[in-house]
Image (cartoon, rainbow, N blue to C red; front, side):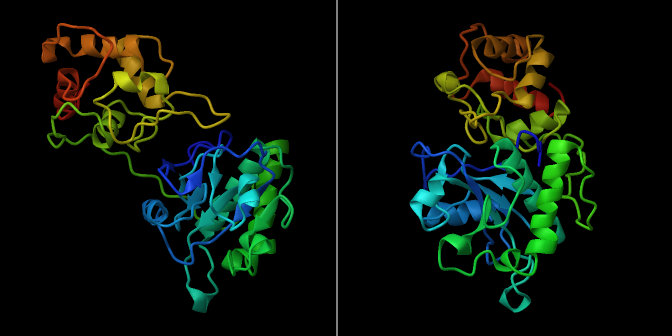
Length: 316
């Protein structure tokens, strides 16, 4: 998790369908608990839900890495009961065993899943996690064996106890759980590679990831998060990995854009708009030959091409 206090997931892969916008006026009342009945990565979970009429807000993979697939403000199709869906945030967990092993989850999945429950209970003022009340298994809502061992052998002494310990730590400063869980692995710092970005004037995930490496950003996920949707038409060259919305209750802005703004000598608020675009145009003016500062990055932008050439040299 990037930030437990603000509930910022390690990866954001928002579905384009199979969820409902908004909550129909309902508040979040509980956290729904699920298992994959398999061992899915965040990307695999996204792929499944893009083709199947089901979804949840979060996926915790076998290494404890957390992905967000539906914004908290929207309704995931998770519980087989639409009214309950509107009143809940739902978490899926990857399994490390199959039916013969009881559909258990790994220590890393259990640890970070429980921590996520605590963080959400705190963020939405649900109180200390209590199984069957503000934390409910899928099987409590619909006839199903989901969530496997998380609703059985791994429930009380492991999952819910650890969620309570994390909640106490986050709200009262109590000692954090010291269980044997393996933390989610962090990508090793990587030296910027050279020469492999396609110089096409289009700013997608690969270009963002290289920017994050060159500018030594804390996250290297290829995502530009929480941008103002009013500026989308100014950024026609910006494609995959751009988020033109901010999750409810979370501050807009991207640390990657802040790093770019600092490098270009303008105020760093994390939001790209006309002034930041023009600063970027000026920054690469000698390399691009740009003569117009129009506050736009159109498809095939010569400014982005100049930036990509610089990034291929490990420079900005």
